[in-house]
Length: 251
Image 1 (cartoon, one colour):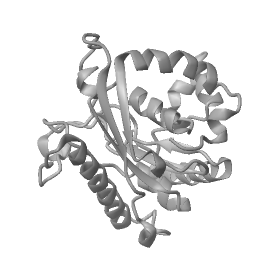
Image 2 (cartoon, one colour; image 1 turned 30 degrees about the vertical axis):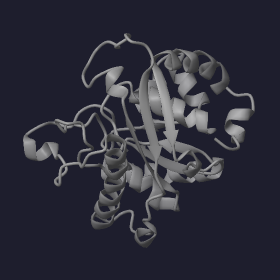
Image 3 (cartoon, rainbow, N blue to C red; image 1 turned 90 degrees about the vertical axis):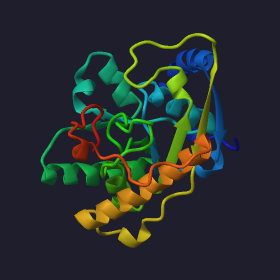
Image 4 (tube, rainbow, N blue to C red; image 1 turned 120 degrees about the horizontal axis):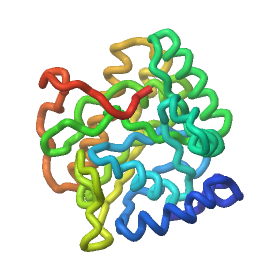
């Protein structure tokens, strides 16, 4: 996988967490990673994966850790107030996301982006905001949280796709599929999405929509490669199907 960053080689709260989580996840999943070299070993990045299972974050976190970076996610602000959990989230550098007005959300994005650059950290953001509603689990319409962070300070915007997690925990499934053990999960990381022409326009809806479309197209292309089939020509849009987009927050 190449050299590891200081995030994983120097002592931190990630070490005991990894000592517990890595063996447990590895009992369930045999992860094959393609394109590991495309995730920067140093500095800020925004990693944007597809999302169709509640088990996805553990697969993505383990893949990022194995590549040599510390996995950090966006997390609901309310979780930071939970005893013990809140302490872990703060110590590991997870990023709180609050439901807020457009003005305060923009200010929050500026602050979060600056902190990523200042500390040289990456963050994992699910651009769909929740589990895909597409019947065949293709990526659905994206939200602008990931591209807002990337555009604000020119942070690399990196697409990622994974496939096979549904064999461990299906969409909306409550329990894990424990037999047979070690389901194969393929993870692929793509080239950074070029949004350089949209820099400085993070406050414009047209620029955000264009950047989000480019990101979702890149993620879908990676998933097509993993699945060996073509995605539908039109991306699933919950709004046009009368469905609410609930679940994980998107900044």
